[in-house]
Length: 631
Image: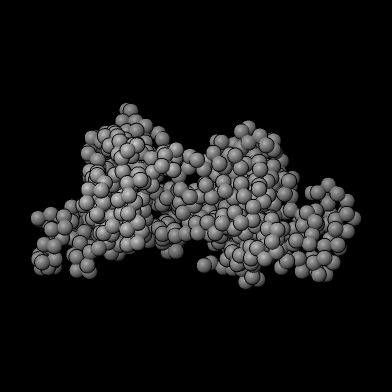
C-alpha cells in the first residue's frame, strides 16, 4: 500500500483541467475557479499551471482573502487584457468587489467546481491506496468527508495509522469508529465555526443525545424550536432533529466534555482510544517531517501522560517518542528529555524513546545520559561493549561524498533512530569528523525515512557542499515549506551568503525550528564580511539559542568560542563534557601532554582558570536559557 501521507494522484478532474488550460492559452484572458473548501481548487491550479508557465500566467489563489486595494489591482489587470489570470475563490466566503466583478462583468469566465461524485471518490481512493476499496468503505468515507478532499485524506491517514484499514482478499476495508485526530477535528469544526452560542449548544445537545448507548433523539423540552429551525435551514440537522454530518457528533462530544481515560475496561466495549492514539502518533510524525511545528494541538496522549493513565495502551510509549521528537526539533531540549523519560517509564527499552533521550541529552552536553541511553539498545552481532560509544547505533558509515551507498545493519529500526542521535553525541564530544561520517552514513541510506533531516544534519555540521544537490532534489518532490528552506540553507552556507542565511534563519523560526534557526543565524554571523551585519546575526542567534533550553550544537559552539582553534574547541568540548585528559588523548589519538597544552592555551584565551569554568562558556544566548525548563 502507498503511504497515504504521500501526495495523492490528480483524479476525476480531466474536463475541468482542460477547460482551465484552454482559457490560459494565447489570446485568452484567463479564468476564475470557485469551489467549496477542500474542493481541489489549489491542486487544479498546480496541475493547470506548471512551473514553466508561471512567468506568463498570474495565479491569485484564495482571492477572497485579498484586501480592497489588491483586489482592485487584479480587476485592472483583467480590464487591461495583457495579463492572463487564474483566480481561485472559496464559495461561501465574501469576496472583495474587485474580485467578484471579474465574473459579474464577464471579464473572465467562471468555473464552479462541483464536489466529487461517489464514483470519482472511489477512483481517487483506489489510486491513493494502490488497490481496490470496497463499496461500503468508499460510501462511508465519501459520506463522512462530504466532498472535502482535505478531510477525506485525513480520514484515510487516521484510519490507516490506527490499523483499522485492513486488506482482505485483495480488497481494502474499513470497519470501526473513525479516530478524531486534531486535524480531523479542525477540519470538521470549520463547517460550524460561524454558529452562534445557541446554535452551538443545541448541536452539542443533539450530539450527546445521539451518542452510543444514550438512545436517539433529544427531548423537545431541551431544544428551542426557533434554534432548531435555523439549524435545519443551514442543513446541519434533519427534520426529525438528527445531525446531518456523520462526524459532527463525535467531534462535538469530544469538544463538549473530554472522556475519562482513567481505569481499565469496565466490562463493556472500550472506547477506541488505541486507534486515536496511533493516529496522533502518525500526525505528530507528519507535522515534524513537514516542519509544521509552530502549533502542535494537545492530543489524547498528552492527557493520558498528565493523568498517568493509558498504561494498557501499547502506542503510548511511541506517542511519547514522537512528542519528544517534536520538542527536540522546536529546540525544547529539556522537554524532549522529559517526554523520552515518560515513554521509558512505561516501556524501559523502547528504542525510539532511548534514541530521543540520547539526542536531546547530547544537545545539552549530558553525555553520560546520552551514552547510557544508546548503550541500552540492541548490539550488533559479535560486537562487545567495552566502551559506551560502541553501542548498537555504531553502524559503518558510507564513504564521504557517496551518499547513495547504504551500509548494512543488524537492527535497522533501532539504527534508523539511534544513528542520528549518535551523530550529535559525537559532535558534543568534539569529534566533528566522526559526527560528519555518521551523518553522511544516515543521509546516504535511502532506506531510512528521515533523509531530509539527516541530510540537513550534514549542513548543520558545516559541510553543505556534500548534500546541497540531494536536498535540492528532495525539495522538488516534497510538500510543504520545510524542504525548500533546508535546501536554501545548504546553498547559502556553501556560497557563504550571509544575507541568504539570515532569511533562512527567519524562515526556520517561523516554522518553529528554533535550534535550527539559531544555527543558521550563527552561520550568517560567521560568514558576514560586514561587521554590523555579523553582529546583528550574532544577536539573533543569541536570542534564538536562549529559547532552546540549554542546547549547544557545533555551530553555536563555534560562535561562542571564536577565539579558539578547531582542535582547541574539540578538546575544550570534551573537557566540558567531563572527560579526563587521558580519555581525551585516547579518543583523539594524541598525547596527554598535547591535551594539557591545548587546555592551558584555551584557559588563557577564554579567561578561565580551570575546567569548572568551561561549562558556562558554551552558551551563546542568555544564561537562563541553559537550564530552561518546560515552556
